[in-house]
Length: 302
Length: 146
Picture 1 (cartoon, rainbow over the protein chains, first blue to last red):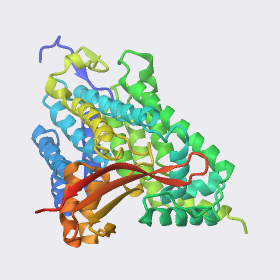
Picture 2: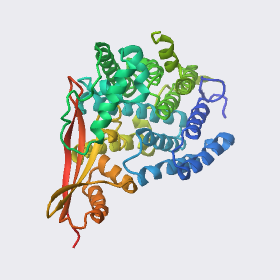
Picture 3: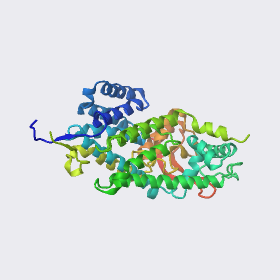
Picture 4: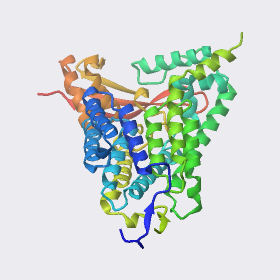
């Protein structure tokens, strides 16, 4: 290297920010692989090799291989895979195509930024424009009552009683298992079910928070890099991770978003990738520690 | 040695096309999913369009109903558990092919049937009372194999 040549140095974490992003992505692949063993084991093996052999981690071939291993189940089961399965494969493709670029770190950051922005843009599009039952609040009202992952939230902040949850569940189960194509004739359709006003307020809050949050993240990540919105990116995405995954324990999706978040960090955001690692751990804590149920038990009358 | 910090972010124009493939695929797939959801009735939760947690129209709230059209009238057929995969496919992506595959195996349970009608219903919740109702998503008739 000639004495006068400028040296481009990533001023980030100790070590290499690209290496952290790659390790983070590999860790997510190892910890959240597909369900079937014949899909899971090859991904485990290749991703583990990448984690254990640092020289391998930076080879586009490893990531192309992972891209193939994460893509074929999508084609085999098309279109029934979960949305984060697609994002997982696209992350592998993004890394595989970034590593041969002249500046792999910047190419990966660009890919991660766009993957996050587009994911949230389409999620917000569905909620705000395409779904008929999101904006009127009925999606969250039904979800809070019918999805077991949200029951603690419904009890804690929605004022729903266990008896009411059981009544809603029984009525819905009877409706869904009925052979008749027409609406149930019994009235009331779920005897004993009473929807508290607090549940409606909670559903309205969740409806607005989720839609506005997702739209804001999409805007912040898709806005041109020179724009002011970019300084909000990390705060919005980290906040979304902390808030959304406290009850919606969709661990795989949350982890992928955190890995992508770390990968899109700029050189000057020296410690921000560590915050993404922190939320990555927090998402597992949310899932593993029955904190919300303990709170329900603690606050239960009597 | 002169040192400078790397410029903050690349623009799309400074990257080769191959390095931009992943977001392009995401956008293409999501647009395809939206088209399939509205054209064929694909569940908004499936297909890679990120429509999850946006609607109650998902597999658990959809129902598949198979009606045998027999000389004596219509009869609703039970779908045995061994065909749960076919039923799931018909429920979440009710294409003619998926419904036809289910009809084909169920003709064995209705040897007298002239035809089978396969219906997929979605659940709609009343915005006031949350009372569920069924709304027909798609229905197709399949003639008995000769």
